Image (cartoon, rainbow, N blue to C red; front, side, top):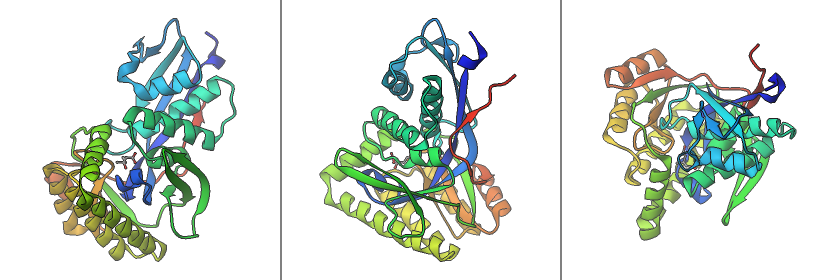
Length: 317
Ligand code: MEV
């Protein structure tokens, strides 16, 4: 095996500030890429492998989609991640983006973030059964990414469409505000939570009204980001958490961490699919919020935004 047939790419995780779940129904959402990365290395192998053992594609649908889409076989994939899986911090979005980038490079295709974002979204959709391009776009483009952003102060990057839903994808720098993550340590399945919300909205106009309320709160929160108003944004984040709880996506551990974080925060909410995973808090007192989260059983860290998105990594010498 020659060294130039080994290709690595990495992509950042993300936190969703506002709009998760509703974004699956074409509503707006906003997310920030974070400085915890997922790296994928691909290379020729005797049979398809994942981290040194023959891969069972039924258990790894994201990888199955990207490898098969490029009609590849006899390929080894190695993964290395600083994003806990099921933490709500974009591990599957970052895997999809990093793998799509590595496989495109391996197949001799040009590095093109729009194409990578499309492949990564299709992989996520295939794996989840239903998804928005929120996570995969944020992990691909990095910085701050909004879907269906209703104002004109972000750059439109691309649009995507799937099964009658349409999303315009915009990017900007991260807001000049401080966010703290609190990880519950509980793994949650995005697929199951997205399916749970779908069952609820299919059978109840009340649930669809909640999705509309999340849209309202998200747009109000975006206005607060535009005018650099952490007090207003914090209120919208906490309100969003209440709405997400009504949709059945919170749990006791998340509520406990949200309440703990609120002691020294402008606002706090679950981030990502929920059901476990993580919360995000907006604060001017990050050390105190970290302590509050830690004392209530969570694993805290202060967010450092990612500024790069997906990238090809130099092979190790
Ligand atoms: C998960 O991080 C975000 C969800 O909105 C699902 C999706 O957008 O595909 C829950």
